[in-house]
Image (cartoon, rainbow, N blue to C red; front, top):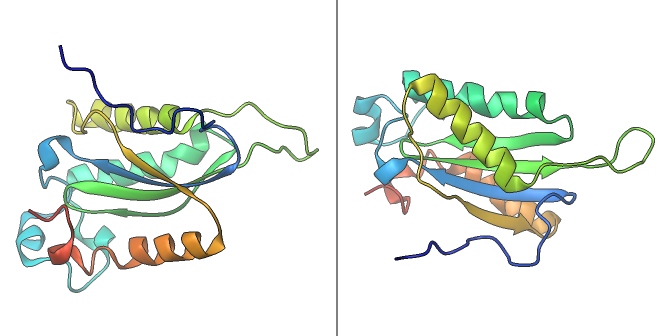
Length: 162
């Protein structure tokens, strides 16, 4: 029996304060979140939100609901691509009085988001896992922000394009 590889760092606490770059792929990397004609042409003009089909709009709502479910979580930046989503998620466990709050793990946040989308769509649309990168410093954050910001423009050269 094959066991799935754990993609998370073994001894890292994914509920601690910090910023995380997350990539979630559609099941079988199907191009299901953009209008078909734009998937074949690429994303040369316009904003990605202008290209979203009804499934992509459900994903957009799911992303925007994340901070409503978790008061100490923000989604700083995101882009919905035809077959995957990139997010910069920030966890801040300090309340107004500076006391630590209980935070969900990154996996719990992603699983809640994926579950919401699949329920609204009516069937599972995501691969089982997700990729994460712990953002280490401001330069790393800026580089990832730029990548997310320009990802739709570079769709045809994206590693998930084919």
